[in-house]
Length: 398
Image (cartoon, rainbow, N blue to C red; front, side, top):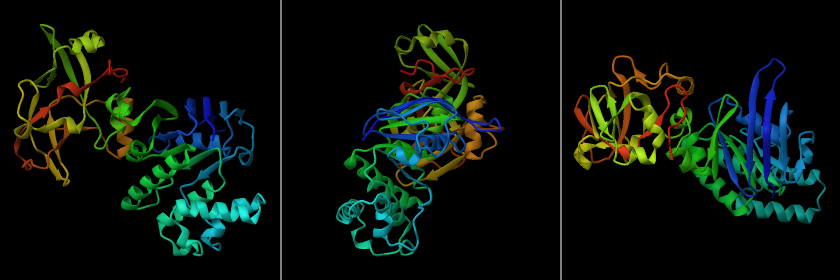
């Protein structure tokens, strides 16, 4: 096992395209780090530079105690699992897993021991004689992982290994990958564009946008305290509700004005977030997670902590109900929200021209809201996030 240290890593292609810009990360020995971001954000390019499959334009990569910038991929002692399974169709499972060990000319007894141990870990023991064409997608991906694990490398590098699987199988394989990595304790860097995958797998998650690292930390930290608007909107499904509002103060009590409605913020908020004082009387961006909005008939309506609207769309999910409703606040239009819009394929984010901003609340399944109904939405004002509308940076998010 080994730590991976990346310092000032950059990649510029001959046509001038900068894919990675000043990336610095330290992956601890045995840690599971997930690189996540929209398509084209540079995460796969960064992983390929660590693997030795892309040349480094700037910065250094250290694996263990060695700088590996100019070291061939085969000498870095890392194993990569690709999006495509890349199995040899004419070889059975045993032979596919053993292939790399045979190239290294290990003794047959050692090869057999390692292959059978890995097959047991991956629950492939009864499939060793089968060809890849006779396996399910999940089984083929486990064979690809087995081929990496059997080498006993210093680190695993995984490039969207579950993207070819259907939704149910992806959930199952996520759990298996997490278990295997925990049992083996091997340093792992895992790339995905699926933020749900990132949140459930990583010890830490690194969010990238256009080649630049936006934030790195434990999954819950990114969820609860995003550093900027991009992380706030990217992490979470559905994403955080963002709206541009006016912040005022009355006798030491802060208020958020959402068009003609007002949310009163908790006592002591200015003490906990003193930087907000510099934004009083100005426009700010507030962010509210869907689960921090609930049907007021269920939790009770607290004065100064509700919004009234009309249900625009109701999605019954079984465990909860997603209720879409417009509020008269101004939409947030920045580079970050435009990037989020491109990722979701939307023309605008998250506004609807005639209604201002459409919010999403994650209501209890006990709610009985229907489309077109006037609703009162209870807002957990303790959990509101604040962002500077010019820079997009969080205001006192601790």
